[in-house]
Image (cartoon, rainbow, N blue to C red; front, side):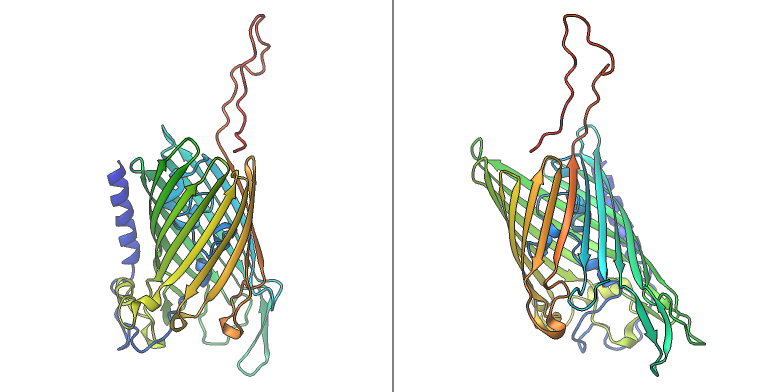
Length: 403
């Protein structure tokens, strides 16, 4: 069954990325040799919607799973310590410039099966660009609107062994970036729609040293947003942010009170640097072309993160994100805090302001919050409403473990 699932996942993704396999390149430089930056449509799909990883330099592929694993690596959900989880995050965007642009994210999962070795999951992202007054090329008013984008995905994951799991997510994407504009005669703008998939793999192994000491190593790999292009008119199709990510995390439990995790993520967009005339490059061809031309090391985004927990109740985080100057020049330091009590956890992340102009991160000087609700299934007490027989004690009612 496990092998059949893995094969089915690979087959589905292969089918999705081949939707435009028949398209032909219309320009001579589809491999990006004469282009400098890689750009995609719907970039909101790569905005980190998780304050925990946001405080760790955006490292989340291989860290311990929670309700936000649907975004980072759907394959790691079966290794969650809890059977159910829900998370919600609100992220202001360009807060220093405008007050009404934001990203909202909600996700959740539920484990099932004989040994809870399987899980279903879902999430929704909503990106609002606020209220905009449009103008024509001559500066005349051309309507008002509220551009918005959103995506919805569902996933399935399962353990393949004691240490290995995998998962698949299918996603629908909708982008209405010119909602409310008064279109000029002859234009055929329409909201864009696309479908994509994520495939994730997760490996984790814990070594018990003593009753209170242990070391855990975790590895993860995820191919995300593999799917169709998106189009806003009849003459052009654009790539969505297809991405390959690799992650590693190492956790050391010093004693029953203290543990620390070090995490490293490496990400690469599977999109070629295209000229405006090269929008008809086939998807599969574009993926392979993303590995051509220039120094490939400079095309990697690197995330480094640290997380310290005290009694699994209080967390302190720090991280660093690096992107080469030739690939966008995003570089920033992050920090974060977390508090967990019973089934509730709240995380906060902050990006230290750095850079100026176009090199300054849109999240600089912004605090993000994530609320997580995680719990195990509570068994119903048998005959709970009936009085206990004489000489017997009422059946105990299980309660949620606070740790």
